[in-house]
Image (tube, rainbow, N blue to C red):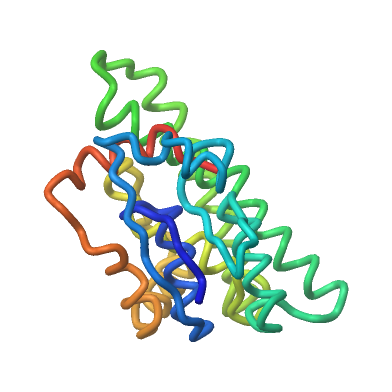
Length: 217
């Protein structure tokens, strides 16, 4: 049984979706940011960086969402090609999300929704960069059904962020390939189940705010 430490954020949803897709048994531990449960000594022994998500599999802790996705894919032999070039392609697009879409859209969320001052220059910068990254995704998805050709952890990593594009004030108009891909992922039963984990609570607005400003890796 895998222990999943998570919250209702895009990065948390990556892992719950993957676990649902892989059919692995897991137990959910929903952490409260209001109570700073991600900073407790107990959790810091699992993730020294004090952020979600993290898993513990038979006593072995894994943190950072991309690393968790690779671990789960390798554990099961699924959602990651076995040949060197196919594996590299999936990891390249996974890193594109980890280093690009997540951080840039996370900053767009902060400055568009939460920052106490209306810094239009910062809003424009991060919204425009997020849109540019979406255009890169759209171009790729005009060549292939999924980011790495077949459905993989790259898609699982990217979808929870792109699906909340409106929250960052970023449009997907005119990105027909990206929209087709979004609809395909939204229709997957495992994705639908994963997005419901953990059960949402009354402090979700604060959870989302904290996650999108801090948990962008």
